[in-house]
Length: 142
Image 1 (cartoon, rainbow, N blue to C red):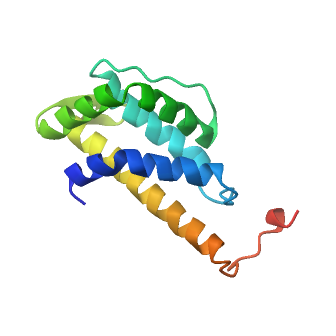
Image 2: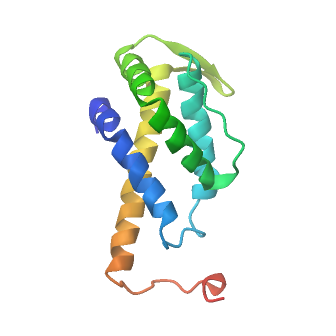
């Protein structure tokens, strides 16, 4: 998907993921408790380079709720930064694993939220349709 479309849908994708995490959807067997904080930290690194500071000590996927509140308060500034980064083809940033393009780093984060939103949306639809469980997890039956 094109970067502009990912940027345009970011707020909706964020709301979808937050809504799914707030629902009765069973996500304990999914990697979101680990992946969401990592992705948010990487997104915050990009925003930090442009003067926006997001910090949260909340563990696991619940950190996304803090980010959504922060994003709602700073939406215009965040969107301006994202747009500037996506238009800049030459800006680099140092990471723990080397030097990468800021645009690429942001693009991957936007892509992550699109994929997470899609996956969780499909799972919620299946749950609402009372689709049969495909696997029996002992910890879910407790």
